[in-house]
Length: 600
Image 1 (spheres, helix red, strand yellow):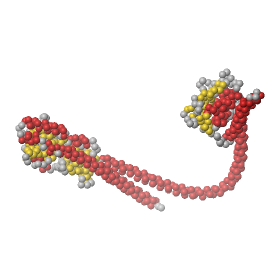
Image 2: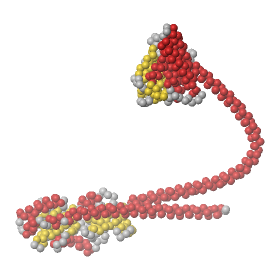
Image 3: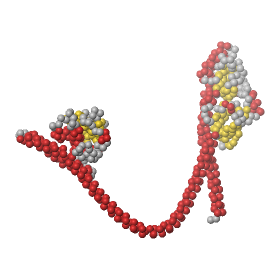
């Protein structure tokens, strides 16, 4: 392939990659925008319905109140006798009470000419009394026998309000009109903390309720001269300089929803909103929700950027994979050439390898012979260790048998056959024990098959003391048992546990043989799930440098000792899932502790 063709292929691949990148990013941005608009529409529609329902509920609360008040005869009597001050005062207080109960802004009574005869704000400086409102559309509609509804700024109070008016009919004649004014300012307070903005506009498109104060009394559609003249005559927004809100429709989504831009010359910024509009025909209002598009545009920008990173990363990974495959192909080609050279070298080396193999076989033969000699040496070492262990473990029972035999002969000479029988029974038990001891020492060559059973610890201790007591019957030292749990039981091999106790008692007695008042105390206690057997002596204790080595095989501080007793004992405790530990007592002497799992 020529260099020109390679360059052409690279250029084509680059263009295709660029087009793919543009299409993916554009499609991702469009999907993100469309999905965001759909979610925004659903959320905005829900909030718009809630807001419209809230307005309906507020209006419905006052809708029928004027009709109910109009049935009161004290209003009719005042309309028939308007110059009666007592009747005027009575109606003033009545309307004041009604106004407080229903929570209205103002409640007042007008005669058929529109003159206010009584009002709930009669006691205020700016009272409606003696004010004429016959120019208001709600008065005109009520005098026709209809329910008058109207929104306007109060000409007296200057406050926004929605007016409900109803005729007072007597003898088939409309004598006057009762009016209830509802305050709308609280509606904005309830909805002002939301992210979306709301606009409520009248039939001319003038905003009179909004969560954005700077949009108040601005028109969302252009106002003609005739419309402005009509608004002026009705005094709906008396004293207000009405302006057009600078709204630009960017895109129409449907007949009731669109994307708009509202320009704010004071703050020099343009805010874009997604709007949905809803008509409230009974009130004569249009309600609009404006959801800001800034978050949606930011999300689209983030989505576009993420897609850009993903596509770029994918292209880079693809390029790296292609480079790797290319290098692998080159490597395989190089390896093929190298293999041919190696085959020749292999043939040359074959003769040398055959010679090396012969030498290795000879070396392996020597190694096997050496290993067999080492194994035999290890066997002899183990055999010597076992012989020493057997001798060590059998010394105590043999000494006991010798003592019991001497006692039996003495008792026989004195015709004390009962005591003779007891000594012979003990000799029999000891011979059985010696037989079991020889079998227990098999764990040095293979895993031991233990006879684990539930034992009473205090009984085993007494048995061990009986075995060694003959040896120390002429000694000034004594052996005591102190038990806080005499009935404590554990799972152990009774023969092996006796071996350990005998070994520990012998060691303790040897440690105190130079004491004037030597004492060995065996404690039994329970700590949680462990049964503890402490063998304490009041000797000199164990030197700190020896404590870590005391359970090592063949370690001993005795001149004639083999150093196997404690090592064997520790090994037996490990097999019985127990522990054998040692420490020095603060008062002097050593403490060996046997730990066994308690059996309930």
